[in-house]
Length: 437
Image (cartoon, rainbow, N blue to C red; front, top):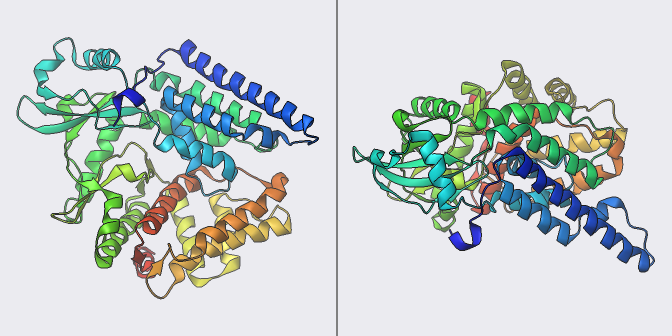
């Protein structure tokens, strides 16, 4: 990680964070006015969406949200991982930059965070501490250390001010989305945003993540395909999470391995995802590749981050099981009933829009219905999905915010499909799904 290119102080106070959002809004508005004037001089009559989605505005939004970090950045990441039924593709591309653009804290701010958690003598807890982070994300950054007892660990240290700024950050990003003109005015985002606040408050409490880390460690203790780092409770607080350091290569590195090993690894990860939903009712919903490592010597998959874990209500799990059974049977009527039960609006919309929604469900169903290992990379799935979601843009009055539980699970499902495509893995989905249904 390039310290010179990535280091920036985290705005911790509400006023400083509000000022940052104000600068974004002012910069975007100025960019829209300038682009509008240029377009009118050329004899064009641009839509407000086109004025918003300029390269300059895209760079401004992604750069400033990356400096803010916290919920503003996290919400951008969450929206950009959606399956396309909430925000337009162009805005998703802007927000997708936030998955890799996190900055790190300067050393002085990092020291203050450690003093707040452990006291002025915090260095006495460790025989070594590496100031250069091994990773940085939206809510915190990760540092390697050695405890006084000789344990090789990592500390995930939360950025200052993240927790108390969640509500205002999400409200400000929602305002930015409205300002873009890309979200229909009649679409009610309030339930989705309220649920996002609850989820992010949980995610920003590292004591909650510690419980999920322990729960997954227990659930997978006998499965030798996975490694869950051990929690160090005495060094864990609500703003610092301490766990064993687990070495490994980036999960994408398996692309260089033989086909059989790529298939095995990705198949194991998809099987785990289904086990999480249908057996544990508890899913780690962030499929960012950085949350997984691969150990070449053992073939084990290291699971690193449980902050985005979400518990799913039995009602959702039951309805989703029915949806997948309908997909396996290619039963359109049953798909519609299950989708409506989950919370999708399928019937009270324009018939063409309804047909497009059903087409999307059937396309995903093709992956699970296949009677042989499925190669996502070679399929037309992505192009067909894009074609359907682009066609939906003509029916903006029928847009509804998708069910929040579906957004979180589809975030994980989409990430697994993306990994399978990236490493060109072939996975026989049908028996994995039938085993949990």
